[in-house]
Every structure is written in structure tokens, then in C-alpha cells.
Length: 326
Image: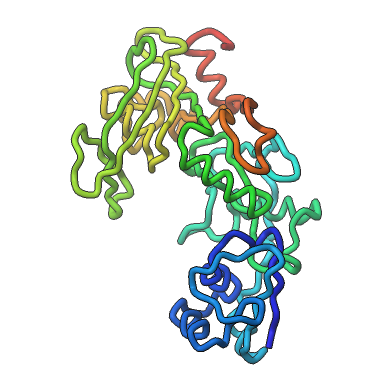
């Protein structure tokens, strides 16, 4: 029999989800069966799949050590070099500056050098995370950026922070996220764009529609003109919803694609920018995060904003086009 004591980083989650993480190689059906047969108990009493764990609870696993160890996936600190910048850090949250070209999460092509793995290594080196101590918790990001979009990503250092950040993002008006981009054509003033986004899994592209279609997800984008030379416009973009390729596809759908965007942009203009500025990816930078409303252990961040400067290459393009260091 093995006993697991529940701490701060394990509380407020269903026992079935906790056990699925604790014994990553065990199927959910196996876990349900063990709960049903009372081979898994909480505080030495029968429990239910949906029971919400509390700090101080103890879980009893009436299984052999060989079985338990066979189900546990060993956590590994990936040996990756830190390439992100630190914008802000405290005991709960880490705000990092992701460079272009770096994936936030692992995918089928890259499972080692990602932003999250770099952040985990950073926290491990600073003795703020130890996989040997944590039962299931791993630091994680709550927002993601495309590989070639640079800027601010939020990392939760503990489970309470991750839960509160995710809830604040779901509320949509708690955390406001802003981007800088340069688009084709002249835009003026401030405007809200609404529509529906459909993703094609085969091509990894999305389409925008004014009317809801099957599989379409609602999108809401706001842009504000900062500078224009008539041919190109520097804008600030705020996303109310956070969908795949939302900014790139939404602006392209109204005839104002991003510079350097070879997926949704203007190929002729992109080639000009590639030749003149060596721009081989979309001009898009997540430059500002504002905490409008905060909950729980993050209440102290209310009213605070954090900024990330444009990378040097994008700043050079902006100055060249608009002759200003705005």
C-alpha cells in the first residue's frame, strides 16, 4: 500500500485527474475500476471519481509497489539552454519574453527545446521546482504564441496560480493581451472585428467567416492605428478571444495582412520585405499584458501592466518605414 499526502499543489482537482497525472501510464478505466473496487481510498474511506481533493487529504493506493512504479512516468529536466528573457518574476508567476523561432510547447517535430522546457529548467536551477518533490505538478504556460511570434508568455509556478490564471483568461476581461504588427495598406482610428474561425487540421490554416458555420469558433479582435505612411500601418492589436492564427487570419480577411506572413499574407510584398529586411516570418510581437482584474493569490497584480520591447530586427523595420522610435 502507498499513501499520498495532498499539499497545496495537488488540492482543488478531481481525484481521477490527479491519479491520471500521478500514474501517467495507467488508463482512466483502470483508475475508475480501482476506485470502484475500493483499492483506492481517500482518508481511508471509499471515494468517488469526482471527489475534489483538499490540502491535508491522504490517498491510499492498495496496489503493489511494482504495479504503481510501472504506471509512473519519470519526470525529466530537459538539458536546454535558456534563450528567453525575464520580464517579471515573483513567488507565483514568471513572465518571459519568447524569441521568434521557439515553440512554446512540444510537438511531433520538437520535444526538447521548447519555451516551457526552458522555463522548467530555469526554475529547477533556481531551486523553485523539484520533480522529485512534486507529486504531479509541473510549471506550465497559460498562453501560447506561434513559433515565429515573439513576446510575453505567462508561466505559473504553482498549481493555485495556474488555476487562477486560467480562470482569469476564461473571464476574458481580467487579463488583456496586446500585440504590435505592421499590416498592408492604410488603417485609421480604432475598430472592433468579429467573426468566426474554422481550422483545417490538414493544412494547419484557418478561415474567417462573418456567419457561424459548423465547427466555427467565435473570434473578437480590436485594432488601433499607431502610425501609417499610407502604404503600411503600424497597429496595436488586442485579442478578446485567443484562437489559432486569429490576428493573422482576421486582418488578412479584411484586406490588411501582416508583413512577412507567408501563410496568410501578400506574397509580392513579403518577398520585398524578405529581400530588404531579411524578414522571413510574420511581423507580430506580443508586447503588453495588463492585469485588469485578479483573483485569489494573484490579487496583488491588479492594475499592473508589463511590456516587452520590439526585437531589434522588427524595431529596425518600423523605424525604416515610419522614421520614428514610437
